[in-house]
Amino acid sequence: AQSVTQLGSHVSVSEGALVLLRCNYSSSVPPYLFWYVQYPNQGLQLLLKYTSAATLVKGINGFEAEFKKSETSFHLTKPSAHMSDAAEYFCAVSEGFQKLVFGTGTRLLVSP
Amino acid sequence: GAVVSQHPSRVICKSGTSVKIECRSLDFQATTMFWYRQFPKQSLMLMATSNEGSKATYEQGVEKDKFLINHASLTLSTLTVTSAHPEDSSFYICSAPLAGARWNEQFFGPGTRLTVL
Image (cartoon, rainbow over all chains, first blue to last red; front, top):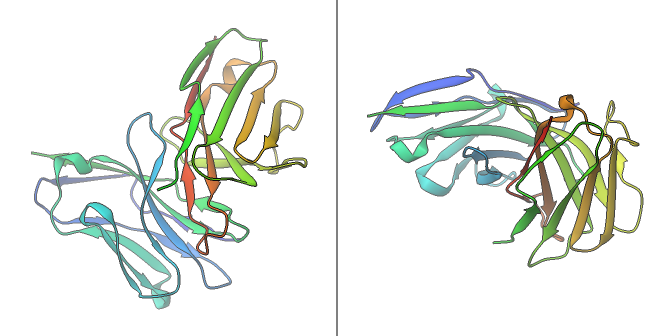
């Protein structure tokens, strides 16, 4: 079965600093990978997705992620954090038939 | 982009009562919808796959008789929590993939927070 591991339940950065949220996946077939953001009491919004095209994927709000097959990783980055980036971030892998398997999430805290 | 709505956004009920949550795809048809539950500070756990015109498919450990799913039309799926108990209190989120979307992109509803007293 496919699975996702997100290292670090909380990540704290200062405004303007680099954001790095880690995601490692397990899959026996080429995966589809996704990053979602969730604001308090809201549903999930897609940030970006990897679908076996370019390994460096650019998403909304300045986020990007790089698919590294050798490391089975799909880490999310943003060069400069903004206060509005504070939220919960979920990495997910497609299990086929449109099912998603989510990681446990990483809460990003941004301090002024 | 495609929009998925949920109603109600928040519901409080007494233990032993039933609660119905609606999930609608507003500008597209969805033959399949997914229901997730999310406990505080935890990830989303898939509960079931709702299939238009047929029975839902439940994940292991999810009680079919407790969480009734009906997908009567191409734009509406409902989740009914029967005989709710405090341990059913959670955030319930539905999602729907865009038919024909190649990359399994799903659109999520805003969620329904259920509190059972």
